[in-house]
Length: 407
Ligand SMILES: *[C@@H]1O[C@H](CO)[C@@H](O)[C@H](O)[C@H]1NC(C)=O
Ligand SMILES: *[C@@H]1O[C@H](CO)[C@@H](O)[C@H](O)[C@H]1NC(C)=O
Ligand SMILES: *[C@@H]1O[C@H](CO)[C@@H](O)[C@H](O)[C@H]1NC(C)=O
Ligand SMILES: *[C@@H]1O[C@H](CO)[C@@H](O)[C@H](O)[C@H]1NC(C)=O
Ligand SMILES: *[C@@H]1O[C@H](CO)[C@@H](O)[C@H](O)[C@H]1NC(C)=O
Ligand SMILES: *[C@@H]1O[C@H](CO)[C@@H](O)[C@H](O)[C@H]1NC(C)=O
Image (cartoon, rainbow, N blue to C red; front, side):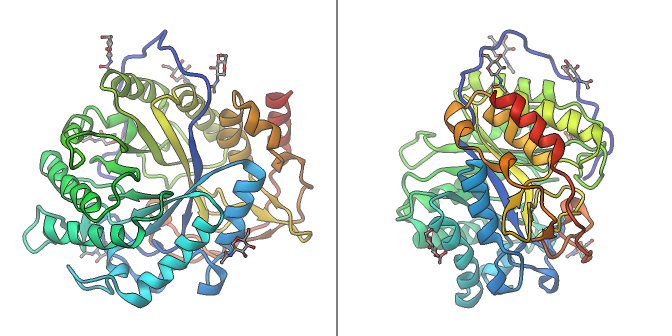
């Protein structure tokens, strides 16, 4: 991340009335195809770990089923880099082999009945060149052609959601809005006329700076073929360590006022957002800040219609931001404390129907084996080294909290 200290002090808006009921799209990032991607939009495929056992990675299929069955989640975000989809050819067609592997993950996700998000995990770039803005970079037309190809594949799948780009940064936001528009137009013209499309802003789509970076305003111009903004939803991300990098085990940024401010802006402008990525370490400072943040998000679920934790999939259970569940020898999955206390609990608190079906807290404490095979060490671990998974021993506090919530 470019800047170190969050210095954003935003107005706390009191008395904003929240609509009861919780985020409609609730789920998890199932990472692995993105392992090896850096924030400059370069990707090293040698560290890629697709989150399917048959592709050599973690058991993403079983994780998704767990999140659905035990946690009542309904949406998964599936990161993949552009270079992989076109076998490293800038402006190239979808590569049948590589796209075929990604499509296996997509089909596995769709088969669970969940909503499934294509997340193009390129930070607005191709090998350090900003799409549509740097000399030698992919043009907006090439970017639109990629999205036309993906939309053609999935136009008949109402539960596929198109995530235009992961975390653009250090670019001209007005020009970027034109790039996003090119992708939206291509998706709609390819026949995917109704599916949700996620619109990313600059500064890594940072939620608490979405207004001040001009992202919120610039993306207002992006429209469907008929000029409406139906199902064009903002994509905001947030980490809570001191530099918003998502690489530290402690949290020190209070994001509640920032989310409240963004909720107010969205409501005033009749727009909605999903929190496409948010995550935290698991020490006590993170439990405090992350739980508080996610409570505010759920209290504003009329405008924050989606929430996707970062991350499970091929991350090990000891990755600094791990939300990877542990599988006991009896096959039962258990979420870690961060997930049960700060992700699930705020979502279930006013969600009677989902709470009645929630079962994760009732599963036995595992003598866990890890499902994740690898974790990585730079920003949110997209690029980096393999570490050994550690046993999960985390569940007790989560049980207490969930019982308090349900009873
Ligand atoms: C980007 O977000 C970070 C973290 O919230 C913040 O510290 C920084 O000031 C932001 N940068 C810009 C240009 O707004
Ligand atoms: C699809 O879902 C069904 C029902 O849950 C399951 O039995 C089957 O194994 C799944 N197939 C794939 C390819 O995931
Ligand atoms: C992008 O960043 C990675 C990791 O820092 C580095 O190894 C790579 O050389 C960079 N690529 C380009 C094209 O700048
Ligand atoms: C975070 O900010 C909110 C709103 O400004 C405030 O009510 C809350 O006490 C703060 N939390 C911490 C831990 O400082
Ligand atoms: C939303 O509108 C209200 C009422 O006009 C105003 O007080 C508030 O500041 C606006 N929020 C934002 C973030 O602009
Ligand atoms: C749950 O509902 C109560 C009562 O309306 C409200 O005060 C609280 O903020 C809600 N909590 C969440 C996380 O939505």
